[in-house]
Length: 279
Ligand code: ADP
Image (cartoon, rainbow, N blue to C red; front, top):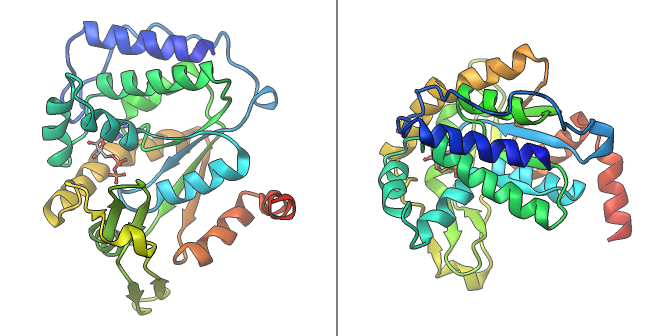
């Protein structure tokens, strides 16, 4: 995929210009790949979607469900960062400090991790993607725009007080790596806003004793991540709004309420039925 090569070149050219600030505020220049040559038309490839939304809103949950339904890879840059953190690679120590403060990793590092992941997928014959957690800065969005076409941007929305509760309830099984949530959200209707109920996503018995909380899911760090999201990533919504690509989706509740509605607005109900029928 020519786009991967161009993304790799973007990462290389940005690193030669020095490390970007941890919050990603510095603009990368010299990106060799802003030309649109080599882009495959949407009808010749799988979907290329982006999921936006605050930390903890549920991007991973819905992006991974859609990725299974559409048979395209779900690529979460947060997972790429955590894999790197778990490794003994040279970046691990540097990343740990940034991530545990709730700050953004530099555009240079994140693009390099994403490029490597896309290249691996390309070698395995993957086509299309659902990106989760990328782009998170306008600079990242511009770089992505320079290398490939994004068909649609799904912007998940949920009240901030609920987001905090959800982040604090998140747990990962240290053995199987699956994500769970212990928070039970039960917010009554008030000030014209509808009630919201989200049942906890409890682990099976054998995962229960192996549950871990992410180091960056403390109250203080979650609030910092939300602040950074509003500052750095909100403009990404505007970037895609201007291109007319954004599908806003207000989560009406937990998975049982939200998933069918999301399929409906994405016109994918038939696909789900087909999958169930052939499963
Ligand atoms: P969240 O729950 O905040 O959506 P993620 O799992 O997506 O968390 O990401 C975890 C951390 O990885 C982020 O707080 C940030 O430090 C880093 N990270 C992930 N994606 C990006 C990105 N696109 N740009 C910069 N940093 C990123």
